[in-house]
Image (cartoon, rainbow, N blue to C red; front, top):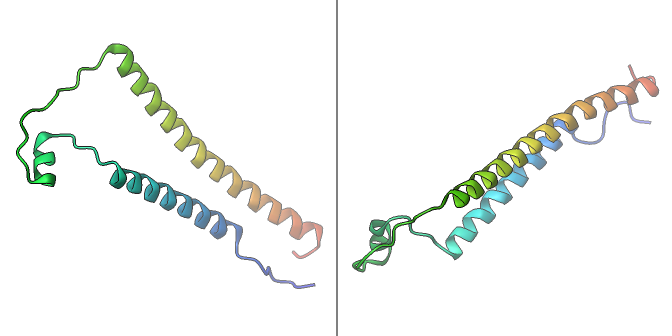
Length: 108
């Protein structure tokens, strides 16, 4: 039976999985933005296409639309907080489980 761990440290592994998931998510968002670009100003549209812009439609939002946008943002913030919370909990449990295993097998 080996006395040293043969797997990568759990903290490093979990950190790598978190970083990889964030990179994949950001890459997916960027790819979707490239596939369907959105122009926020007439100037940016003219700059991207090289054509004159004859007019622009302003955005009028209703109260319920603003509330829906706020709810989506709160949902995103909740999801991001949950992700970081679960990551923190998994680190704590991984360290405790590792310590318990070492005690159970008399490796300390």
